[in-house]
Length: 151
Image (cartoon, rainbow, N blue to C red; front, side, top):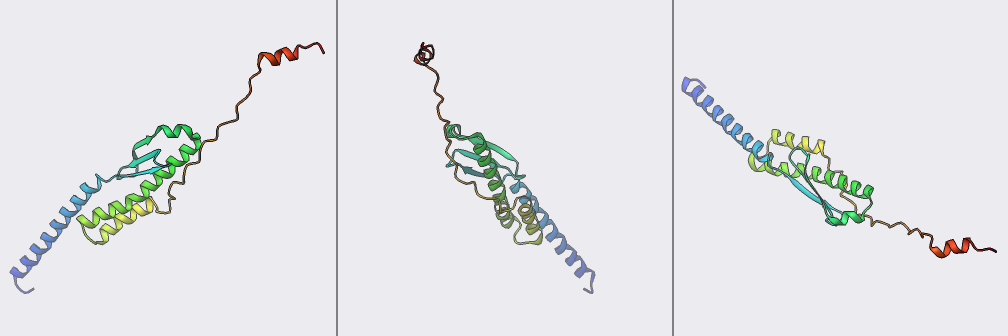
């Protein structure tokens, strides 16, 4: 690096690399912004879609959830959402690898998703069928007549 031309060449190469890296990260940011993950639970009766921030963008419940206890629907829905969120890290990792390549910055982005949405979130368990309460027998006219019997 003895001549001004060498310095100019090195600065030009560095500037080109920085510009290209910024372009790839801009592309990665735009691509990650479109990422979504959809998961289902309860044999397809519950479906949750989450966007790149992990916030649900769509929740769908089939009529089959009407035969489930409300607490079971809530449990299945939350487990389904956590499973979708945990899958975001893999999807974002694929986008980062495709646009930015294998870099420490890309790994840091993916690691932040793994930290926010850990994979140890269990997959939604099978739905428990709703148990209908035993029917209550209503008094009949015959019951009233027996009660009024003179004996």
